[in-house]
Length: 255
Image 1: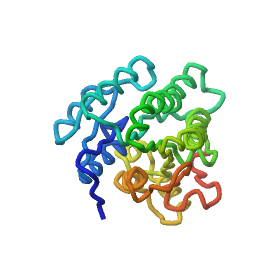
Image 2: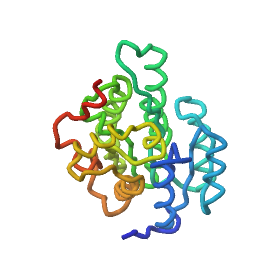
Image 3: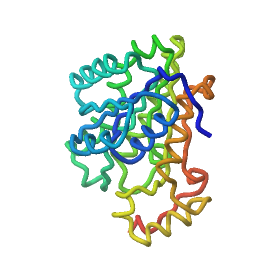
């Protein structure tokens, strides 16, 4: 059931032009929030925002400190206040350890980890005023090791620790910080690159025997931003169909 919030409440969602980010924007709008949609893909952002009402699209690469500062100031002016920040922007780039160049490593870290740090830090003064919430999007790959994810998985594990650090330091301001670690999600991109063998292997390894949906992940994110989660902070919720509870699987990915 959608919980209605005060009409003046707002949210910022990074990586908002597609996927989990866009699904989260839609759920926030259904709650009655105004939402700033942040993305670095200008064409996709424009198209996504054009189909929605009560949104403020802002072009920004979250890995660039000056761009983040300008974006946060723009959001504060446009929204009037900031009640929630969802750090969803990320790069999914997989490869073997020995084939991961330092440039590739840094590109992944710059968005997946640096972006979370920069956006959160820039939002703190605004979230202090509203006693708001931060939700960082990690991955099941940050909770369990998996083939080809040396940079991606490490970046997401760091996001989980960063979330704990945020909760420990920002709680005195009334700011809550939590993390969502999605398991396999049935996105267009995943379905385009996952072979039937990989799909079958995931289904075998996940107790619920299926991929999750973008909307299911978004529902956990919006819950953590809501008054219903007012005493929840420093937590990582694996929205993964039980994947974390099972052993290491996916033999198709190890060949």
